[in-house]
Length: 245
Image (cartoon, rainbow, N blue to C red; front, side, top):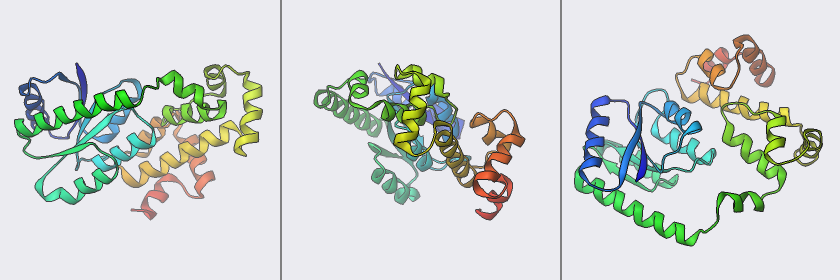
């Protein structure tokens, strides 16, 4: 049974899509329903879905931003975009970003069946062509490449040097030295840079409150987050958002 994450802000539409999936009688199950891209990313941090079905237009974070984040964070979930007839340009843009298919609203059983069957065929073919396991991928990467991959996968949360060192089976002091030599900055500086970049993106592209952004990025103290952001960008988060609306 293949798992599906359904991302749609209107409950009645989610219900309709879930029923359409069930009526195809294909081996798919909606394991989670969320209302926007932020909720989807939060769920995908600790769970997995073979396929993500997402609407284009949603509050807080839209479908295109979600697709971009799934690709940037290397989340292992294929994406199908669901759009209205007047949103074809958005769907076309999503296809250029690497989604595997798109469906038009209202989603018909025949279209859903065709989409899911195509995904199964493509997935089976991909499995035959790419025999590498996750362990194979790790073995092909250097320790620092593995650590960078681990940091990005843990975003928007936080990861410690000690935890990263344990993952790549190195002494934390040695990893710290190696990281600085190869990256030109220390581990904490690199993590802070990624967190600040994520904060900037969330301020620009979502309607999350600043306190919510701080919490998502692992900052328990809002004042500390504000000071860190100001130190990095020269202005407070609230001022940055006003200047970039």
